[in-house]
Length: 267
Image (cartoon, rainbow, N blue to C red; front, side, top):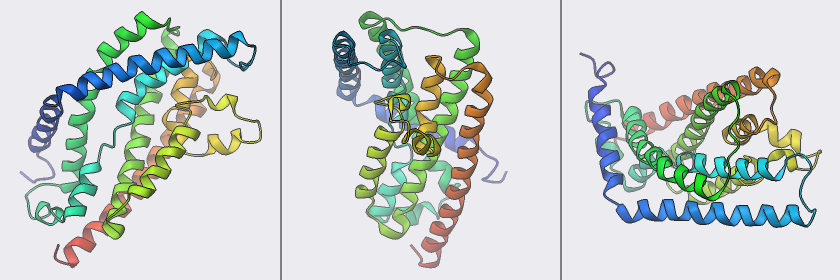
């Protein structure tokens, strides 16, 4: 059977990555503990702002606390660089040997990242329990909840391809740390993870919504808290799907060009 058709090796790669992550037990504790601290601090900050009448009128106190809590939960999975192994292998030159193995190298990187993401997805369970103890999360109805999960999945893919494109630039530059810092800052600022985009000045909102970062966090979160009504679900989710297609296409072009560069140069 062609190596393109066999999925077993990639399932094993994902399992090994999951077990690798599980060995770092202290990291598990710090991830959950830091989540608890951040959610408590955000609750205190928003409560203080609303008490001083310095709060935005677009979202109620309960809505903004729900927004921030769900954003932190999403971040446990979304903030992972799923394909950073690509950069690491390009940096130390070991990717040359990967191209000699009977595998699809790009799928190997995705499988490795999937294992890491699945492990962090498990951490959502204790984190959600902590969130329920610390704050009251307003859960939307079945339609909005279904749209949220669909939007969340598309947002995850947008983030995955953005990270993959960044890591692919290492084919030419080797070092991408500075660029990653800039993109992380832009994602935090313009993606809606920290501050809802509906709170931005009116003249900045069209610019922020036009970028792919908004498709990662802002769209699913605004669906969850009801800022995007059902009649706009198709438009919002369609925009996310469009970004997935565009970024996947860019990823494919960059991967082929980079892989060809490695093969032509003989590793």
